[in-house]
Amino acid sequence: MIIGKDCMFSANIYVRNGDSHTIYNEHDEKVNPAKDVTIGDRVWIGYGTTILKGSVIESDSIIGTQSVVTGKHIPKGSIAAGNPIRVLKQGFHWGREKIR
Image 1 (cartoon, rainbow, N blue to C red):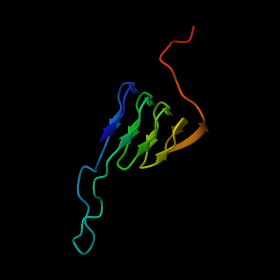
Image 2: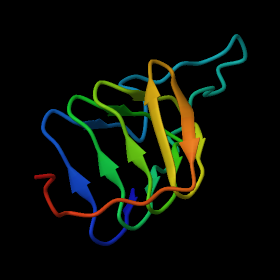
Image 3: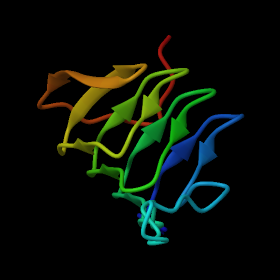
Image 4: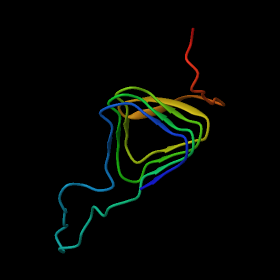
C-alpha cells in the first residue's frame, strides 16, 4: 500500500490489499492475487469508506462517505462517491480550513 503526503482520513475506513481467503480454479491455480492500493497526495477519504485491492486514487481527490472503491482508478482532482464508486466531478482540490 502506498499513501501519499497530507492525506485526511475520517473514521471506520477499511483498506484491503487482498481477499481474506485464496480462491483456486479447477486447475488448482490461484485466481485472486493481492494487488496494491495507491492513494496519492492530499486525498480526503470520507467516513466508512472501503478501498479494495487494485484501487488507485490520484492526488487532490475527495472520496465521499460510505463509498466502496472497487479496484477503480480515480483521476487527479476528482470528487467520487457511491457503492460502487463513480466519479461525480473533476478539476477540484480541497483545503483544511473549516467553513464558517
